[in-house]
Image 1 (cartoon, rainbow, N blue to C red):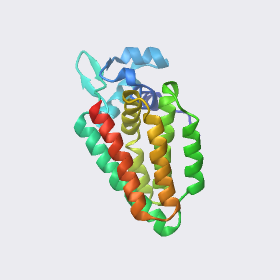
Image 2: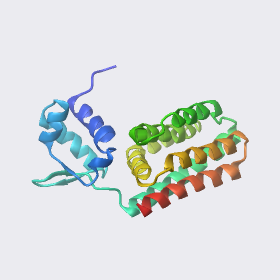
Image 3: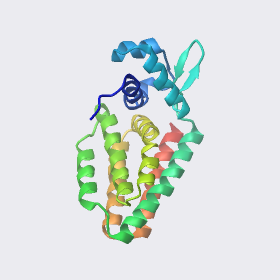
Image 4: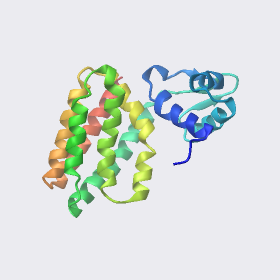
Length: 210
């Protein structure tokens, strides 16, 4: 596997570590600050920030740096709407094809159960995304996989915020995931659609209330 370029290293660090940190929401980042944190020059960092700006994940403000704007109510609503369309489709297709990855989903749910508490919130949400992405991948549509993976950073940002906003949200998420798993495992597309809609609806309610 080829070594990462400076731009790739900066892009991955910013997207996976900085943008998903609840304490970084609303802050401005300078190229020098990032360079000091990861030990590379400012040019690849500038290139990485341009890529993130093109994805609308940061806003570049002259003389101030890169602004990590918290997700707006509209962005959160649109994210949940898009997730619902994709995830309900995936549940229906995998049930129809008999390709529901029950064992893998069960394993991920158990892993989430071991990640309770605020200090593990980010890892909990990373596994949360993987739970849903595993269902998407079972459809076998590579374009759909890439599309869903493109939502990952926003999903993790929104998910971490939701966990910090409402006490007990982790337990609720586990229950909602169990309902999704039970529905797809039993081959009931209507119950699966309802469970996915309920899960995303409760997440949206928490985020908009916060």
